[in-house]
Image 1 (cartoon, rainbow, N blue to C red):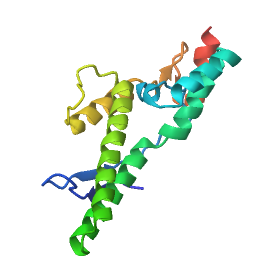
Image 2: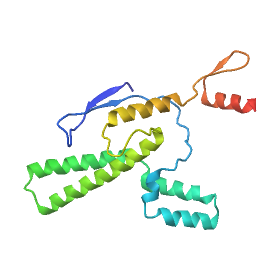
Image 3: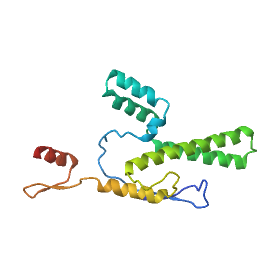
Image 4: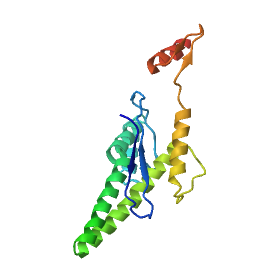
Length: 181
């Protein structure tokens, strides 16, 4: 699939952002669990940690993975879905006679969008390890570009063995590194 550009809805701005879809050809290997700060704010967090500690300290990780998978998996998709719902609601409000329940539903969607956008920002901020991004900074294009750049730099895509041959596959690189020790 080639790279694609899409004109997106402006939502709150007078600018129409462009979405760039780039084909990612890396092999999809399961990534290690990451603890995100937004997990702590969830009401189930304390119960999950306590249950994990009482059972076994190793299960804390398992409990947090379950919470992360159940509540925070696909945050970016959730934000996009809420934006679509909000846009649809706003379009309906322009066309159809506004009812009080439509106004309240729109307020709920806005609140939901703010909440999940903050969670998404928190996750990306923690992933990128960029300390200069303060809460409320809306410079997201620069932020996401920095995060992707940092992630791209943090990979081993090629390794030269002692005999001079070059290996490129993830599994071959893994074997070679393990073989050295």
